Length: 364
Image 1 (cartoon, rainbow, N blue to C red):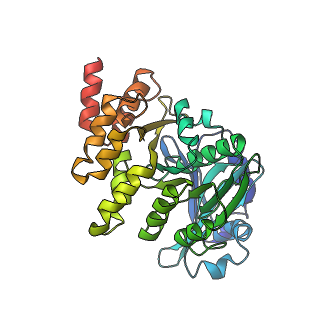
Image 2 (cartoon, rainbow, N blue to C red; image 1 turned 120 degrees about the vertical axis):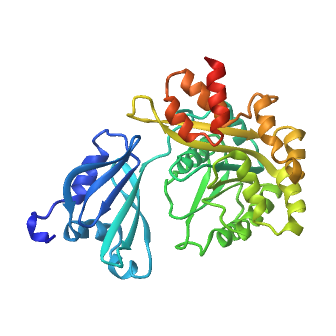
């Protein structure tokens, strides 16, 4: 289709208009020669049926990066783009054998939301009172991990005099100094990788470290070392359950190292939060569902140390012995009971659907 079919449109204004519209969505998808889409609680929806042309996209692409044309030849571009009301994480990439350009945009608030508004239980603050150890925030892509971590860091920033160092790709929330000193580093601009950024940070007198993602052996190894050596470390991972976050972290190590690293993790782990964003029953907003492992007694530690007993952590969470650990299904059941989410959406989010089905039937 030729660009002559339509007059040039102001895409930056359209994005601003969308952001200020009050509509609930997490992402914007702008694909050359296709209508603009947004990701709502009920899935992807067209804004209108008018296709976006490359000429329409150029001002947005230039605002994201002046040299986008040269840089996109080397691979996808990941850049923040700040508007008045929010911060956009933009990923620019080529597709269709380099025939088309696409901009994938994740929408984030300009400032972290208060921890009380995330949907996590209030007692999650007890995790943040620790001066050392490891907190893992995990869940699938688009489950709000970045928002949760930013809220947790901001809570520390407000309540503690610390030096917080973050290693991110890209920086998503800009934290303003309150009680804490804030040093935010971006991969690869400020440091070549997560692992090198983390190693450098350990020599920069941090109290709190945040790692955008644990994705290799070196990062996992340094996270364990930092958590054991007197730092509070917050890190994200991509897993579908709290227990699988522990097994995935240990899987970065060779089998002969695993026993020693499991002992280190058992000693350093404060807890795991695994979360999922689910459409509200109204379909208008999202509801946060979460499962948690609190490592606040010897029982969880002893299960982490013994690989043959790791699966028993799920049983421990169900027994509610510490009144803080809980399974995702327990939280989903509560959200269904309160009519905040539908049974169908809860079943989609569950990683143990048969168990949830039985729990729902027993509740009736």
